[in-house]
Image (cartoon, rainbow, N blue to C red):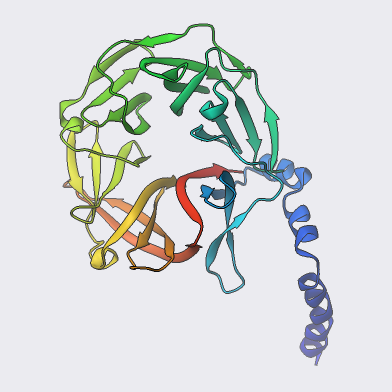
Length: 331
């Protein structure tokens, strides 16, 4: 008898929550007080963002991956955020996304993903375009073309602790080409790939070097999970992994069913110790459908790496959109 009464009392309150306007509900979920309390409790949440190009409006906008009522996830435009500069470089640091350069040359922005607000940062020391950025020990290293000249490549450093640029402008005068395919961080070193070679930068030694084993594969759109590089090799439809400590390449096993159909437009993101693969299936004369696959990874004693598909969601039907970049943020 008492159980029936308590159930009836719960029904009105739960229905009232579902009637709350979506904007009001999101303001409750993303309030600063809630994030401050969660931070004190040591609770964090991983969120996925995507930078998409709208062919109709000719601008880049940030979208966030939300979960529908049925449990599936999909990308939703963040209306409070302005259009992002063309060809800017983006890097996620904790609850923030930093943007540098692009068609605005020396612009620098910080996006707070807890409130979806934008803050203008001190201008870059030099105008820079077509850049890559990554972080090591609270310092963001930005590599790009100086003054839009692809033969003048430089690197500048932004200190996230002081929110200021460091004074030194590092010239890149070795054989780094102008068509760049990827930039990742492993074991506190920057690994960069142009069309022909891979290069490694050690900030402690302030020097560049080559890695011939890493250079043996034309990796691109890669990410790093637990200091191992992963990327999708489209020609063989497989995930390849490179371990800089063992200096060897491996193919991630256990994913044959995932790659039973031809896919394209792939990119990878590190997401809370897991591997996220974004891809689209190939359909002729139809809109591109983008999927998000969450893969858990397991290392075996013999060095083998096995992947297990945890989920696969259709997150976007791209009628007028082009895929650009995905970012994982911790809030």
